[in-house]
Amino acid sequence: VAGWFSGSAAPGEPGPSVIAGHVDSRSGPGVFFSLGELDIGAEIEVRRSDGVVLRFRVAEVYAVGKDEFPTERVYGPVPGSELRLITCGGEFDRSARRYLNNVVVTAVLVAP
Image 1: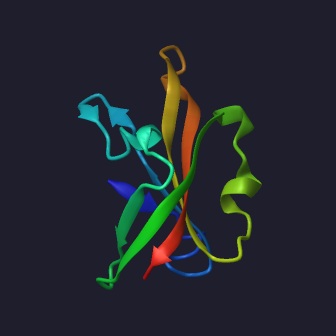
Image 2: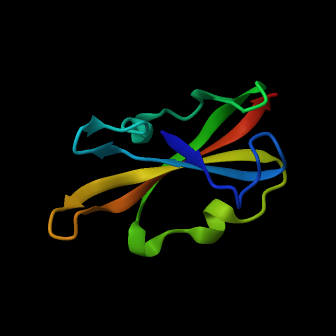
């Protein structure tokens, strides 16, 4: 399951729409298990609750330490409709029971 951050723009509206999902759990791979493997230019479809399907094109994929999360880069204003997909990544710290990084994908709207 992936969840839309309601404090961000709705998918297709101006601004960054932020959707987060687990990379994995004790029961296996999560919804964003392969997020970091997306290629630049890949297309992502988002189906909104009103049935509208939007297509976004991947513009960048990067990993960043959780302690260095780029809040402004992810949540800051943008001129058009963009998508930010976020999950955990990098090394898993067993003592802290968490991943050390976040994987972030930025995609731009190409078709409503």
